[in-house]
Image (cartoon, rainbow over all chains, first blue to last red; front, side):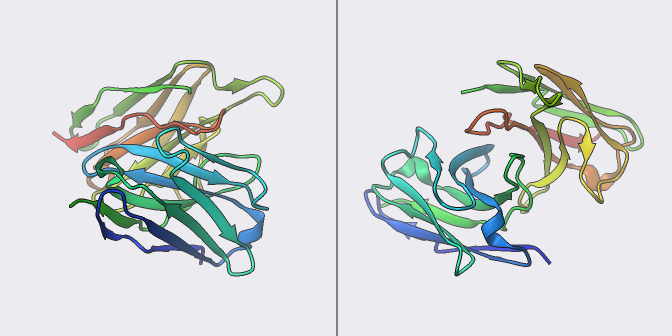
Length: 119
Length: 113
């Protein structure tokens, strides 16, 4: 069964840091691009970061560029999101989602991990 | 970035009736070299992550009931639920993946009338 499990969320003060992880199983992780997508409470979906299957290419949304860094460890079947200089507006559920190279749709999605930025 | 705009923001439909959701992109997401529209639809039920319903604008994901249909090309797309069931109550999102970032519409909430 294809599965993505996020972890690492929690409560953090403004200006703080968190590192999210996404553990993948049930498929050949190194063959897929990966993404982070977030959803603020009661709001819609916002793409955050993308990384190619090899890790050579990565892109970030303007809203997080320079503060968030996406990375992956194909040997550990894991995706990461290092989040620095967190702001209140970064409060959201963070989902990791798989994408087949050459496609671009996201399937499947993990269950998400909640990040709350508040003093 | 390509802006995706859905309409309506919400709709209430009687059980067994048709639900229609529209999605408009700020520029074409049709790629002529492969004759494909880079448009996907997702369903998100309360407390759950989004689930892929349709990709390439009209191709149903495996296991998705055939009452869900996608249509359109270029900049205008439609998701149709031909006969609404109680389990279809959800928020539906369109997404373009023609460019990175793959931007989403704001979502359309579907409820039972």
